[in-house]
Length: 610
Image 1 (cartoon, rainbow, N blue to C red):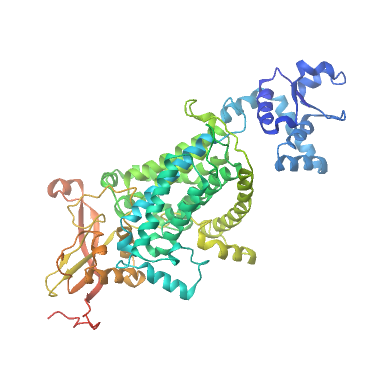
Image 2 (tube, one colour; image 1 turned 90 degrees about the vertical axis):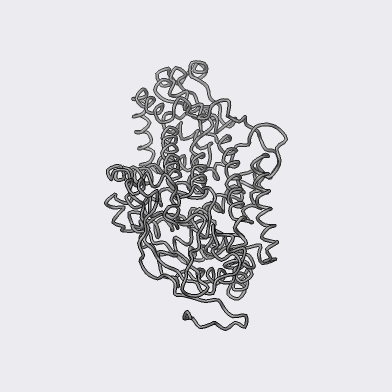
């Protein structure tokens, strides 16, 4: 039994917190009610420190009593109790800390109220868990639908990089375990429809009905199959972030449909892994900007370039670009403060967590307002739900507790333990080696572990915009039938005609348009898919030309094709008023030399125009 001063509100609130953890394993009582049963302990002793009365009559007070109770809370409490009994310096430090707190209860109580609020009980995340799973299902739905409408042009039989060819190359160099995809069984266009359609239906079901772990497992397998086989078109950080978050959902969502109202308390380990994922993603995104050595991040001038050089600007980006330089500098400084400091509040008491949630989610809103970043902002904001515990939600939104019966929940929580070990080990190595650029030797077991799990995207490296692009080269593809008159292909979303307004397209991701931005930053040989793309245009492949806004050769494909590189910049407000154009451009160089269509017999015609 733990006896405490019932007149001390600070003591009572902390006892309520610990009581919720230990349950019936420990009895708690105020000294005003039971003190007379223990005449050996004076009223002054009860007032000065908590008292532990063991079943054999032993009495502990102060830090020793508190740590004895904590031993009933779990492994961490057991470790602290062991340290108190075995390490004299730890015991002395614990008693000194306890006396300091006891002498300054009012001050400490005020600090606790400021950090936690009036409720000191251990936070529960039933409401946030359910909301997150629904949000994750909606994001899966967005991802599957977005890819489905362009899949045939990207990886179909007549697409840019046919899935059949990718699987054939994987069979020569790898194995199904190293190339995990369901496309091993079938590479037809029909199967692409089946896989995307199944993922879409599962996502709708998971969003509308109570979450089921099986739904999330199947969605994860389907999206992993697409990412694995999609090559450069599915090599983005939000794709692997979705896979990492989606795999954790397999260990979070109940595997039995509920038989009553309410929500099951989520696994505390999985909830912590989600917060750890959010920390890694946000902190790494900030720190890589500094460790990359990029001058524009260090002198805070990056946003003077970002809005016009980002992959797919939206209309607001034009206006943001023309804000005063001072606002850009302050914005970069604020971004660094959020990405480098706020992530540490993720593991802090309630009110600091809410502050972190507000800052991190607010940053995502700002990014989404000025750029088309697919479902990335939605997913990052959804992860912030894990910073809001049930006591923070309005009462009308809170879900009542429900206990899950059977062994499935225990097995599910137990299965998350080895996953957590893998995530923690590899993520710490990744943070040190890649984000912080520390020269950390990788032990052989870690190398082997990384090789084993890497194909499954269980844990990943993150860090967006390590180096800020200060110019915007754009590839303009042109076709010709005679080698003299050239007509441009117009893409749906990337900049082309100067008068065309930047689009609003998020959360859809036009993956061809995105990859064209990356290709323009280097040589065409660094992006082999570009040549495949051009060959499909010379063939007049309907799935590929369907990815474009305008095909200047709808009846018969051109004989020749070339790529020209232009430097694009936003027009000034005065230029826009005079011309109506959003962009201005200057010719830079040739990107892709003139290529020509093959003859039916496979021989190339004369590469020179007649």
